[in-house]
Image (cartoon, rainbow, N blue to C red; front, side):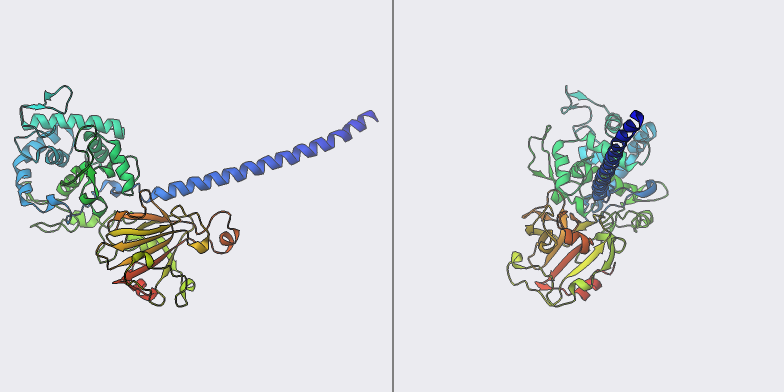
Length: 459
């Protein structure tokens, strides 16, 4: 009997332990699911940004020939050919592409055969940016070899390996380090809508005029070592821009440069076939080949792949769901059903781009902390000439975007976001599809939904 009583006393304890184990297993499972959800959102938010300018399978990225001054000046072609033997000799001795050597010479010494690749001092003179100042070479080639050795040290430090052939990511990181990898440039990368690390997108020394998102007019540059003076605008093309133009260039049978290659290159020669063929393989959500037309598509060159469908039911009544236009000032007006919803996969956080050059004249809920009815993050963009306007809703702004910010056509301004807060249960349950609400005003008049579909046929 004593043993039977003890056995009965154990049963409740066992039951309680079982219930406790089930509770903790469920709690752990829910916590893990939530954490993984946030990890997925975080990585997804930057997935379309981290690949900026990088080609698939080692191909060469096609730079813009319409922005780069190097692509427009025939004098540069003459200087490249004049120094070609030196550049190629250095490539043969170091393995660093001659185009990169030439690009550093462009930035540091304006490709003059009498000026060094250290900081443009005359060959044989001291390079004063070094501590202590020293002569890096008595000939142009000697200064170039010094520069490449210095560049390789930066490549090892910032990319974990040295440059060996045309490796774009390593080249960009090395050039960023060659110029000092200033913290201000990392801050500038974020301001321009790029990731803080590796940061080279914020450096005009590396990327200026590569494409519209890297337009030199958007940059400020360090005027001195240490970057205490940060108020000067950029006037040169970036070193990677120049190297890419040379890589895409047209050459005769002897190796003489005839023209530099780029997307829409301005040159006397024919367009480069390698560049043209690569332009279709470098699409990364707007960071790629330039898109023709007056208005840039909201999802860039991913309109077809990102947008699942047009939400016809949301705007099938006149004036339904339209955001106001008072932020634009002047005589802007709606015109019937002048709005559209472009659905995307839930949680995909698709990059959204500026329709034209202009200024952000109004914002609400930039962190997307509002109910569905309030529209989440909303942004009003007015064109530089004051003629056009665009409204973007249900979005989350990228870093640096706020009221008063001036943006360029095709510059990333936001990503798609969930339409409601976590506590808005009705919204989550019934209205949870992610989409961009978009309104466009051409010459002040709202463009109707059916015309928006025709305007952006990528859908």
